[in-house]
Each structure stands twice: as C-alpha cells, then as structure tokens.
Length: 373
Image 1 (spheres, rainbow, N blue to C red):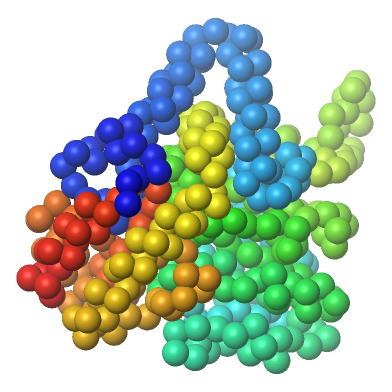
Image 2: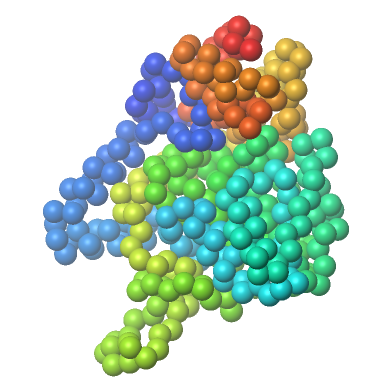
C-alpha cells in the first residue's frame, strides 16, 4: 500500500520507519512553513494580530469539521490535561458525588479526579476484560450521584477503540456527563462531538501538528449552564465602556469561556495547516489505510507468539497496535538503532500506524522485529 501523505513531505522520514505517532508525529514541511509564517507575521504589528485572529478562526473551522461540531463550540487550550482539569473544577462536585473511569485511561484522564478525592468525591474504576472495556460494565457503576464518565476513544495503552456512541445513548438519559479523550483518535479515525458532552485532544500526535495545543469541544446540549472555576480576560464577554470592570463580569456564551488568554499561536498556525491537510486527505481514507496496514501487522505479531493486546477487529482499534513484553523499552531501543521508531513502556511495545506509513514501512518492521525481541 502506498502512503496517503507523501513521505517526502516530512522531514526525516527518508532515514527511518516512523511508528511513533501515538507519541508524536514527524514534522510536515507545510507545518514548518506555517510556524515560520507566524514568526514573520509578528513583524506586521496590528496586521499581524489580524492574521493571527483569522488563522485561529480557520483552525477552529477545521477542527469543527473534523469533530462534526461548530467553531463556536471549540476552545483552544495549552493541552488536553488543562482541558480535563478545567472540566473537573467546572463540575463543582460535592462530597458523595462520583465519577466513573476505567483502567485503560491515560494519567491525564485520571489525576484530576483523584485530586477531588480529598473533597469527598468517589472515583469508580472499571476493570478491563481481556484488554477491552464494555460499556455495560461502565453503566453498571453509574448511579444517581454519578456526575461524569471519563473515557478515551482509543486507549494509549493497548489501542482499544471504545464505542462511546453506544455509551452516550445511555448516558444522555442520566444526569451524568460524558467526557471523551480523543487524543489517540482525532486525525486518524472519525470522532463525533455530538455523541459526548466534552471532547478533548492534543495537537502534536495524530493531528500532525506541534506541542503546545489542547482542543476542547463543548456540546452545549447539556453543558450550556456550566461555567469554569477559573477566569481570564479572553473567557469573559467584552464590556464596551469598561465602567464596571472592577465590580463584575460575564463569561463568554460559548466555548471561549474556557480560554483564559491567548493560545500558543505558533501551534495554532501549525494546527490550522495540518488539519486542512488531513481534511483534504479524508479521515475515512486514513481510517481505512491504517486498518489495512494493521491487518498485516497483527497476524504477524501473533505468529511470533507475542501477547497482542489490541483487538484484531479493525472496528475496535485505530492506529495503535500493541503487544506486551517484559523488556519493552529495550525492544524499542534496539529497533531505534535500526531506524525504526516505536514506543516502549508500561510493559508493552506500541506500534502506531498513520497516513504516511506504507507497506515498505511494515515490511521493514516485519523483517527487523524478530531479531530485536
């Protein structure tokens, strides 16, 4: 299979096989141009600020298209961790309230809730069954005091792709909200922000951008009443004459209420360019591409008698494919010396397949992996 995005358009891919997208992606030349453009725009003074504002609007339009949302429902933040923490405080949880999450969750989706335990909030953790989590097991832990359910769309740990739509159909009939972390899925498989109350994601992984950006999509149907616990000059509505600015304020009516100050504009420029690239390629095409390459990799890993923890069914996975190994870091280090980048840690090796990977990359990994185990 040919790559969907030309490898020559990335810096450094001529010297390696990159299966590291679950951690970060290589630099696309158009993204580099976008960051350089921002640095040039700074010299334009007020005109530069106008360009920044237009690029931000364009970035939000792109993200809204990727998420099936609207630009006014998108907030740009510093990281997905910040977004999750903001939501955890906006909920204003009381002693006896609870949140439900599961063991395949990334730390940023766990720690803000653990911090609330000192306030009497209960954290309910659902176990996996053979490295998958069933929505019925999550629903069994939801009761009248459950205020939020937290899940990643795709697990960083094993690549399991959670059926959040099926979960939300049930959660939406309760008083609990659903927070979906799409960091390991947005940019590689479709994500529907209308089937969650909040969606968060990071800029520098599958979205092909750089560090410094977090995306928060707010579904207003059940969250319009929620206000952040923190406030900044960008999160409040303009006061035309400023007469009472030392007395009161009003939050922005849309997702901007979660934006405290200026976003990281170099990242916004990069993200605007990379999301347009992905939209032009088509997320459905990316999804089918990574599924086909995964269909080659998973049987090969199984033939080596490795403990593959990623579901073989393409509908239950995205770009991440993992297997357990006691020396995961050492395996990754040996592959790196051979010009193959994978993630090794948490007792597993993670192989991440994206639109710029092709059959030659997979063949290289297949040829080298047995000697590196």
